[in-house]
Image (cartoon, rainbow, N blue to C red; front, side, top):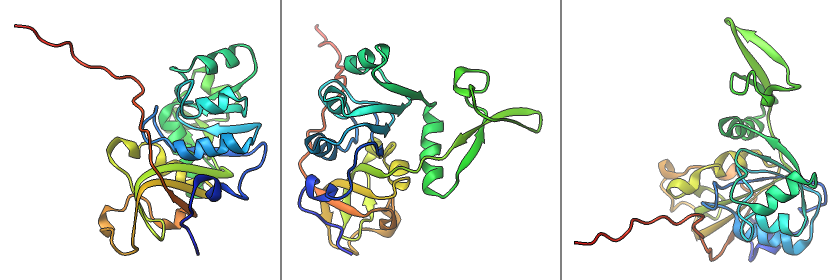
Length: 234
C-alpha cells in the first residue's frame, strides 16, 4: 500500500471528522507533530478530544488548536506553559481529564496492544481514582484504567523507510511510540524518508505495521524554555 504522501493536508485527507479522538506524540514541544497539527487547524475540524502529554504553548503545538477553539477536551498529564489552556479550563470552556504521566503512556500502549484496561496503584486515594473501579491484589489497592484507542494518531519521527518503519531521535521518542500504537490510523511526519531495507533492523523503534501514512517536511523544532548559564567573568 502507498504510505508516502506529498503534504500534511494530503496525508490527513479523508481521515478527519468533528468530534474525533486524536492521540498526539510529543513531550512539551519536543518531538511534536507540528505540521500535522497545523494541517488540522487549516482543515477546521472541531470538537476534538486530544490524548497528549500536554497542550503545547499558546502559539505552537496543540496550543494553536485551542486558540481556534477546535479542541473540546484534553486527556493530559501536564498543562502548564499555556495561558489559553488555563483560561478555557477555568472558565468551563474546556474539559480536562488528568492522567499521571506513566498511566497515560500505558493507556496508549495498552490500546495499541488490544488491552481494554489494566490495574495500577498510581492515583489510589486521590481525585484520579474518583469513579473508577478499585480492586485489591496481594493486600494492595489498585484502580482500573482503560486503554486508549484513538480515531487518529499523529506523531513525529526522525526517519522512516517507505514501508513505515520508524526511527526516533533521542528525547523526541517520548510519547510518540505509544501514541502511534493506539491510533486506528497513524499518520507520521518525518525529517527523512529512506528506501525500504536501508534501516538497520535492530535500530527500528516502531515497526511499519503501525504506520499508515508518512510525510516528509521541514520542522521548526522550537525550544519551550531556553535556559543558559550566565557568562562567567574573570
